[in-house]
Length: 141
Image 1: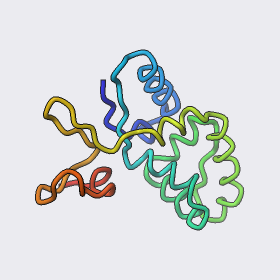
Image 2 (image 1 turned 120 degrees about the vertical axis):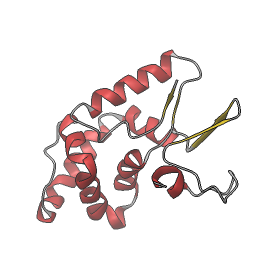
Image 3 (image 1 turned 90 degrees about the horizontal axis):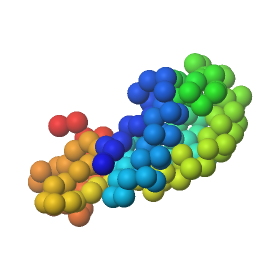
Image 4 (image 1 turned 45 degrees about the vertical axis):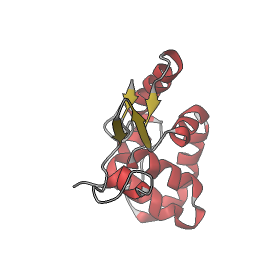
């Protein structure tokens, strides 16, 4: 079974959806998760201190508010709330390291049985190896 990303940020049960993915990856050999741009929102928030305020608000505006609630954190709705919200969101995610590890270990492209699986899209004029991560996770056309 392949999960094509955006497991989180698609409703109020994001936490439960990640739990289901992790359970399936553990129990069903050959199962894989592709990293979507929404998993990438989480990792950018955690990993890049310089843009952490922006990354948290960008994530919240793009479906992250429901995810924050599912992890037990009231989402920030204004920039002035971020200094308080950042440590709360980090602590909530830190309580579930397997979720973060699963997002980090997600693949960007899977090629199997002559098929190519990505979260978003591929540039047709570019061969597979040099496709950009941005395109694999966000391309819409």
